[in-house]
Length: 399
Ligand code: NAP
Ligand code: MG
Image 1 (cartoon, rainbow, N blue to C red):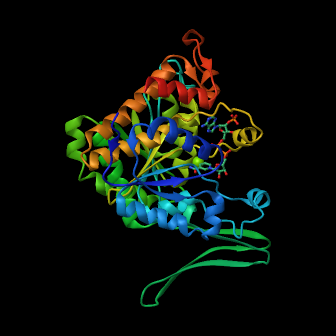
Image 2 (image 1 turned 90 degrees about the vertical axis):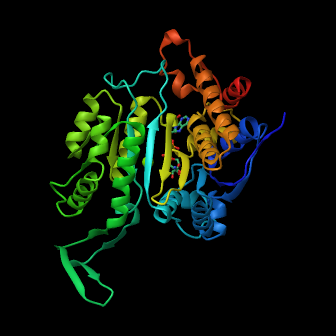
């Protein structure tokens, strides 16, 4: 059989632990036999990030700007525990996702992959809920520090000609913690536009929520930009019979739980981080959530929404065959290959990606699944729990 050819390379960002193991397995068993894979490879594994003083992460993000489409494996964000686990680390490197998102800007769209045999925990949900997470700024690009003395913290903005604007944050009598965060008008505007575009593209209502009753200036700024931008989309929303509506985040949470699903929920960076884990878990599993970062200049980075599945990795290192679910990582690859196929007019490549998705879903429909899903599946679907290697073999058979 002749392999499918590619013209432009995909930016391939390799990662850590169990997802790195799955990454290689997916490539070897499901992609390389059929596609003459062309990638520009960046090893974002923790030790290589450390060796390059994290330059590799910056280089990989710039490569996305050059080539337009990337696929990323989950990566470790070091914390104090990781510093002990990896004594060779010279710094507590920042989250690669935060670094990449700060360079690319944009919005992360996360949607659950649903199958008939797994009913959402929330009984009323009939359709997937897509979270649109703003991918720039706020607490992910903040400065923070601790103070021990009594005193006052003042926030100062200095403009290009040196004029200052300042505000007192608080006077404190003892030890205190401080956080300064920001966002930019242009990033929020592109967040709003990509949400409105995505809603039109997928014909779904768009909800947006913040806490502008408390954060009147900061969150109020987000709301005002969304309102302003919506003026340019109102008519097209009307024509398609879809709506945009803004509500407070507390109200949104309550409504989401009572809803039937089938809409896009736009969230600020932190809300989107947390809510996407809640939504994906309630739909079944963290491992059944697709995630794509769409930048304002039209670049795409596909990834899985879950982490490196550390607990499974330590079992794997002891020689155990773990039942780790590769679906989200497979769909990151298919999303990227499909997009590359569309952009380069390679229908065979787009078609291959669709077949790989179908083979994966057909395997699940046949009741063959990893144990995270098997424990949730309806008993009448006769779920058969297998390990990741067997599961990928079953997909390969169908492919
Ligand atoms: P995690 O890797 O998502 O895993 C948390 C738990 O969720 C797992 O222990 C497992 O539950 C379940 N799970 C997640 N993915 C699964 C899969 N594919 N198949 C089966 N079960 C799955 O989160 P974490 O343990 O909090 O974080 C581990 C590392 O990942 C951290 O170093 C963190 O920095 C990193 N991280 C990276 C990203 C990213 O790169 N996008 C995102 C989040 C976290 P059971 O143990 O009960 O089986
Ligand atoms: Mg998260």
